[in-house]
Image 1 (cartoon, one colour):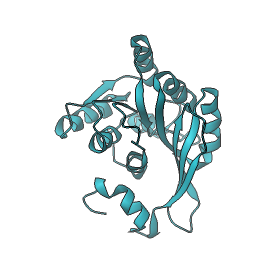
Image 2: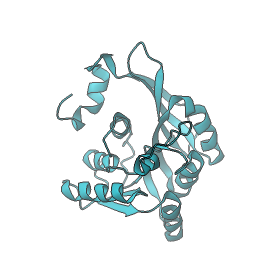
Image 3: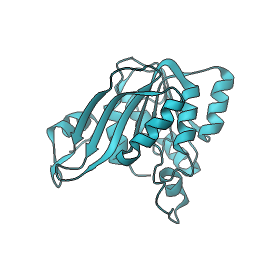
Length: 222
């Protein structure tokens, strides 16, 4: 698994104002989101679940090599399996974060691991939101990044589970391109949505100040 811009954007943009003590990363891949949460917060428990065995092993290895291994825990399980266990134990999370698979309108490739990471057939928005609604604390937050074209569809499903958008950031590559991604923060609270827009580049590899300031703590070079 490679570290992509989407994951870094989400990990840097996600709000930690509520000072979460328990955090869950759904679909960890390399473990990048959980690691970013560990770097940014003092949360005592940061769990990460991953269905693909190779990716799970990579997550665990990266956790062990990090400075925060004592707070990071990896689980090899599907979202549905993990949710059932958490519900049975009566536990919840103050923050849930996910960079979910979303290429639902593209045919899968021959790479099964890549397919699991990138196609909604392995974790639909419906399944993701249903699980989040069961595992999120009453005053908790859920942060996610999805394609902009899926935003309305995603938020309509979220409402079924009483999850409402509280913050939103729409992302585009440069001033000449269309909006490509939506960073969303949801909770069980209905409130006025705080909206913003982020442009990544002024020109090829010429990054905007806004993007640099957002992600600078996570790159050695930018």
